[in-house]
Length: 473
Image (spheres, rainbow, N blue to C red):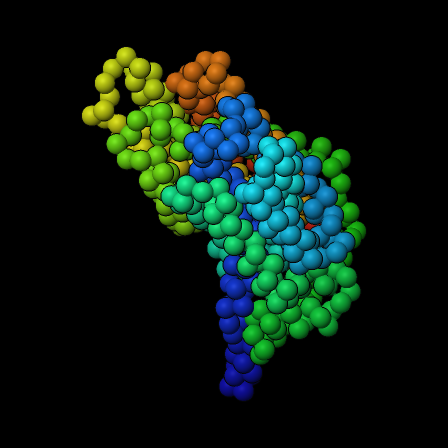
């Protein structure tokens, strides 16, 4: 009886007494993701105001550059951000990226020259690219295993919340007010993040075990027994120092690279960023009975709700099934939008002017439960830990590059072939994406790293010891 009681007492001490500090830490850190969302969708609310006020007229081509400079700026910062986070810490790197996220809003909102807008958008994009790598890293390292998946989805959820917030600011009809409102999220992060402790995993990597112990007690509760988790963190740190992953090692994971880069390709070339960046203009052109601002806000609300429920769907349904359904329904939505705009010029479609809003909403919902989060999830499931950080950086760079190309080329596509043919092109790409998913993508739900590697390569790639130990535990 005494042994049982002692065992129960030890087991109880190893369970975190409180998860509140973890939720607070991740919520504060992902304010950077909220800011990314506002930068991505700001063009939808702001670009029409430049020409409406005649204070700083912006041509269609200039507008496309203003839109695409955020993803362009993000491209070169993905890999250096991870290195800076390893050198100076996750906390300092996140705080440093927040500084330009805050000040760039005031340059954008009060600029009297388009050159300053271009420059601020590019610098803000560089900060967005760095934050998109370091913030999820920090969130995963402070969260305990039982809630790591849920806390990991907060990054994407905060992005969608930021998109909704920027859409809602269109009701102000003031570029100054929009910029001030959008600067509130990075301002709150700058003020509050110094009070959030550093990642315990990074502290262990620096040999600061006592500080890591204190941080674990902060995030898990003062009565939490840290010995087991500290030992696991030390083992992981040792393995990472020995492995020293580099991009050349990805040659051993060719099929995983083809799959993840393919998923990123079809994610971005589905046209989702074109819809988000130009939502207000699309609804204006569609002649919807609702105002374009109201329609954009409805889309933003739908995206937030869909992203919230995507976690449940991903865990209950298979990754491959959701990707297949997502790609096929996105294709239908794009073909529907294409058909509407094709017949709009020669027919009175006022009685069915709700079709663009419905198609847009369904597209966003199905994207948010499929091709939105799952490609990022697959990166973590198709690669072993010794190359996961390198693979994540490569796929992040690929994603931002494709986002830039689609955003920049959308206006050129519309000028060259019309908005109807542009949407049908995106629909055709998503249709090809369904074939890619069916033929290339394995189901990873509920499967071990060894099982996935055997399916991909017909043999088992050497799994780092910390992964094997974690599964055995």
